[in-house]
Length: 396
Image (cartoon, rainbow, N blue to C red; front, side, top):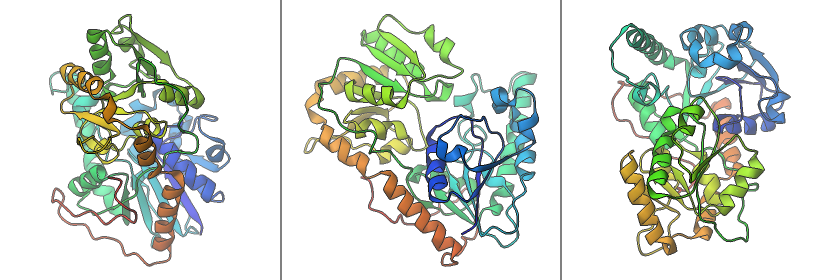
């Protein structure tokens, strides 16, 4: 099967790149298109691919400021020329990759991490003071409105949508009026494993340091309670978050996977305050036996088992994104420590293993390429549309 892979940008190894990596290993002869590539920023399996980039690659400073280039991205993805000799186009998209133009008659499967959050559902999380006051705010909203119209208008370029969670499948239905198959992303349960060691007296956050992750809430809650918190990650919010940290909160910056695994194995619990489309970090933590204290919306509701009193759980949820809710959740967790099982957490994570992801996604792609699955016709945007059945048991 001659495959064209399309990814938004290659600037680091986050959850989306871990999904791409599986396809690169499975189809090493595929060609890979992306808007921008920072050499050496991804895994060897991705770096050894034949990678082709857009005109954004040639702009001075683009590797550092690519997020500010959003107004140019529709034109950049339109300029990616996919040759007519491919059998299948597969885009992995949380921004504009799904807008690539496939050759006539060639199926296009989009593995959709989410419709663009900042254009559709989550502007307030990305832009502080998200009102329409002032010329800068007006210009930003005008750009995002234009991008959203483009995003919806180009959704017909996708013949088959695959969503990373039921949460995202519903967003695809609302934004594009399309059904989608749900195939959950992979978690490296061979690397993230249990260790025979006691839990230590600290909480943990592992995240990119960006506003919508809401790490400020976890920091404020642990400041208020005097609880020790370790934050791993880097990003544009690092300086602002550093100024919030009290004496019990420590920002470690970027760490290796081995160091993160060590922290998962030692922490008393992971705190996950963001609203994520799926969330691989909570599953990595569970693979290492750590319970998770999470905001109870989004993909985590599909991956964390809350204790119901009759059986041990793998974490608990808090209902609102505010400091008081996390404080209450920490108190509840500390009162119910016996209600969380590392064995149950490990078993839950194993249901999302890499082998399962590769089997389900490649099986679906080969089914599409073989002509055994027909494209889904669009219907009215905003209408609640049933999700296609998953090919694996429900994680819960």
